[in-house]
Image (cartoon, rainbow, N blue to C red; front, side):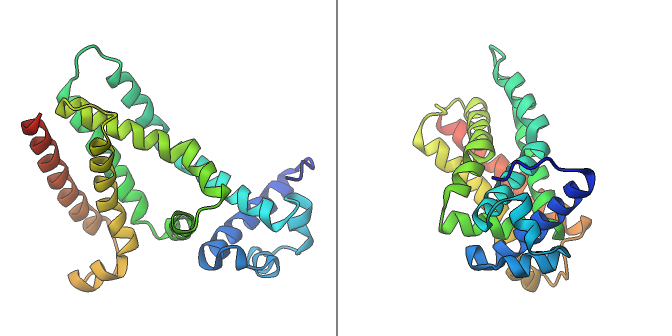
Length: 222
């Protein structure tokens, strides 16, 4: 990637290019053209080469931006998880509260219109992964996935390394992601026009109910 020193004006140009690139790549993948990206960003096409080097480098820069964005949003929760999990005895109430807090944060993030392009980018990478997904997965998705698995295991008395625990964790995340990936279905079925604050709260309540059912069921099995 280009290592040219960047001024404040340059940082603004880079930010505009990355925002436009995430939108274009999310829609068209690597078939998106640098011309369209530059036009959407309001920048000269040469700016992509100047700041990033190539379209492929810009694609990786988008992946890094997404990883940083997710990291910033969930780092406080990851720190709380580490503190709770280091305790010699699990505080089940604190564990449950953190699981629900993390779920709430994900729902609020995924029901925002501003994160649609980010979701499109990651969805494409999930179905046809490139090195960009390995970057996002390694830096934020895998660590957060592990934290959630360990929290569920701590509450239920299960082994966090058990494949079934990983699958249970993924199932919870899948429920949350369904409200993004199946957005149009739920809007049509409910008669909602958008995910406003009230509707997001309805989703949070349903997911909370499902998480409690899962935690109670796994605890009884344990």
